[in-house]
Image (cartoon, rainbow, N blue to C red; front, side, top):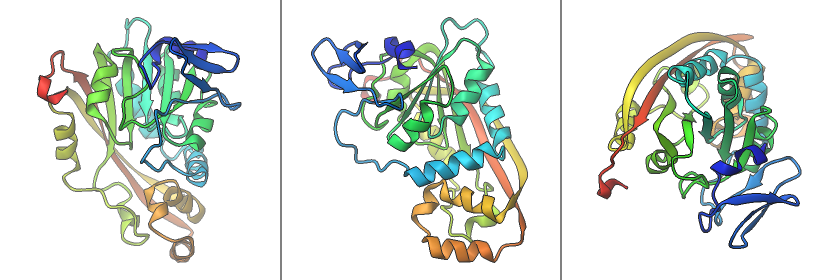
Amino acid sequence: MLTDVLDLLACPHCGGDLDESEGALLCGRGHSFDIARQGYVSLLSGASKITGDSAEMIAARATFLDGGHFDPLRAAVAEATAADAAGVPDPAVLEVGAGTGHYLATVLDALPGARGLGVDVSKAAARRLARSHPRAAAVVADIWTQLPVRDHAVSHALSIFAPRNAVELWRVLRADGELVVLTPTTRHLHELVDLLSLVRVDENKTARLGASLGGHFDRVARVGVEYPMALTRTQVDQLVAMGPSARHLGEQARAQAIAALPDTVTVTASVTVSRYRPLRQVPIAAR
């Protein structure tokens, strides 16, 4: 609920504290943000250049994740987040690019008493996020601008199949906090990449991840998760429709390619889950 995370949030225009009043969030300088009837609030500071996931993409993702196919990935993220969480005072978990909130909800289940804040630029995602967990709040914001979150406010941050703004994640994490990142390997969904024109994972993705976080974070752990999934043609369609490839392959071409598949297809899920701790001091040039 938004009222439970007000102390974590900041006005996107002036950085001031936010309070709730008559269905809106207000700051001391008079900036006002209406709370949608679905329970989320938009804290965009202006028009975003980022195109958020469509309602159709979010619906496909929700259906696929509800089917349990990525449950081992959700469990690995929760395990990584809870690894050193015992005794952490007032745990607060931020997920950027949170989508449907499935991963955030799994982490909150693993951290009793923790508060959750899901941020996504898509309003369709925010609607799902707002009802993903009783302890989760949903905010529409652009992670490539300043996050509407107070400095050093959260104990954990999650980036799951999502882009990362290292400077902002470092800013909002506590000094003793942790960042958990899930990234696909080159083997992720490799059986479908060429057949369905899926976006291919860059072979240098791991090196680029380290470079993007270097100077702000130290990696403290990394584990691989890989397993086969037996998917029907309908489930393959959901898998393609929920990701960026949905924008690259037309519906007719996708339907024809999937119709040619066997009744059941074995598809590999393959990711890396990494834990990072923020450096206590960051060079001025890197801030």
